Image 1 (cartoon, each protein chain N blue to C red):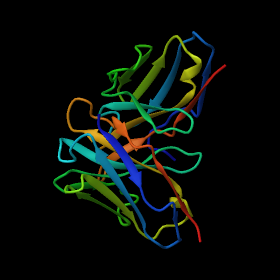
Image 2 (image 1 turned 180 degrees about the horizontal axis):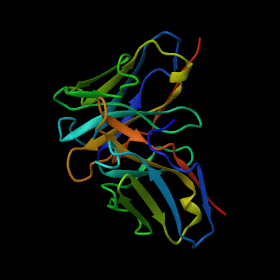
Image 3 (image 1 turned 180 degrees about the vertical axis):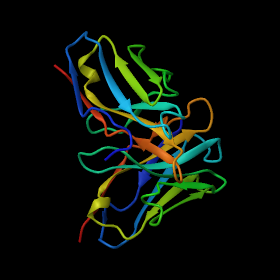
Length: 111
Length: 120
């Protein structure tokens, strides 16, 4: 059971806009920034969004992030076949001894 | 361009100790970054194991803390993971990753990962 909650799956057709949610609590998302990672099949995760809504250099502006209270969202517009991957949210958790917590991951299928 | 490369045995016996090393190239391990280990069991999600700063300061996942030791070797520009008393549940791909202390405060660089199987 992951500390952050994501839907296990999401899907969309090419060109469509999809969103992936990430729900947490006051000790993680509620008090710290959220990061998003994309993991293509058989590869290491790649940083997609940091500090809630910042894109690293090289990440297309089709990807955007937002945060409100204890929840965050990743939006992908103009969906492309190469976006088919697993997506993970993550945040620092201030409870107990702290540490980074991840969502369980969302598998995005491009139909 | 900083790169990370994991190395270590791919097979560990139950009750034994898993030992991995992450070599840092293209940059100094003494820079303003935390150096982390993250693992992913087959077909499952990501789990943060712990992190170390070049000063030797560490933070560990509370659920693994009693079995984990992360250390740094500045002379070799690398850091290491030891996980003791392993069971089949520790079978996973183990990644090392960089976590800057400023600006991009996230795992911005990852190693390719190394599969470790716990089996007799």
